[in-house]
Image (spheres, rainbow, N blue to C red):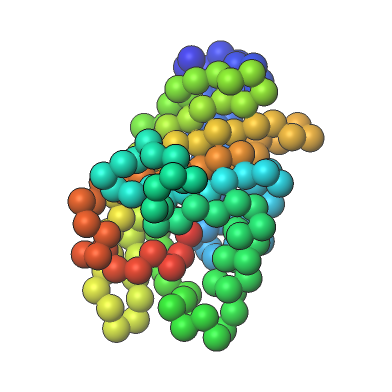
Length: 167
């Protein structure tokens, strides 16, 4: 499905632009604007490295948030008392190999590779490498995130440090 429109009416170019905008918002810590890209019934998941296709209701996930938990996560990340992210980490996301992988009627499935570089004062640079799987839905004419999985390639999360920010 290269540049033709799918059931959600999106082209690959529109999907790429959406993912690049999302990455820019997260890198700039414009978390409320990022949250506005999600649907009210969204899910945000970082599955276990050894079971990336696991169901979040039956396996221990690094992160398994619904919309209400994402709202709380954003509040905590913006709070100066949240010492894990104050001052906020500096991040830089590289998104590549964006593909529309499925058409689910009112939503589309998208895959993309990522590298997230994280910099914190007094800490080593961290690199998080993996791929995203999205379910995007069009609401009020705009694409929105209905589900987002950040699947890390690293075999051991401990070596990567805390994932207190939004991958």
